[in-house]
Image (cartoon, rainbow, N blue to C red):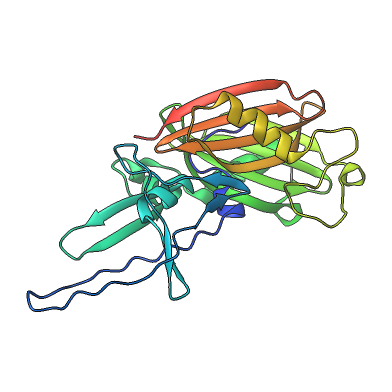
Length: 261
């Protein structure tokens, strides 16, 4: 199971947040407005309650058809790094791979193209036969690595490659038997495969083990070592929880906790 900050976010989440800066002069008039505060947020189907750095809930509200929400709480839950430039009153949002690429030591990293070629060479797959679905920087156990995922034919290849040395830290390949996967219409949270627990049940199992306040940011059905598993990623502030659940029995096979410093 691959682990890391915001993994799978680039392929599955779109968060829209509106930041409004109000410059008010000493002579500006005040007024009372009526807002709708019965607003909820879900991330990948799971309810999310925004909280500030002190752990207190932050209210959301809608005014004139626009929803106002705390940028930091929502974006960090979705896997973005959030900073605030007080000089320009600007919220600065950065994806994890871009943030890693800007940190000291980034000049020592191999390129993403090099990482992809290392994976292809190890798999014995030609570049012309591969379809890449992911290739980017991530953190794992305090080290920077490239997560590379691609398909060739009906086989899925997953690689974790050290960003400095180019060494393959882990790899996995699965035969993707498309005939076993449900192609019926319906939401991702309700669609199931015969004999397997639902995605909603997998989320429930993972959240029951995670601390209160954690939010699911990814839940995917995958094959690992010949069996179906749900890979579930959750976040609570800057802590990420990665869980692998047997898709037949519901048993948690792997659990990992990472704090993104």
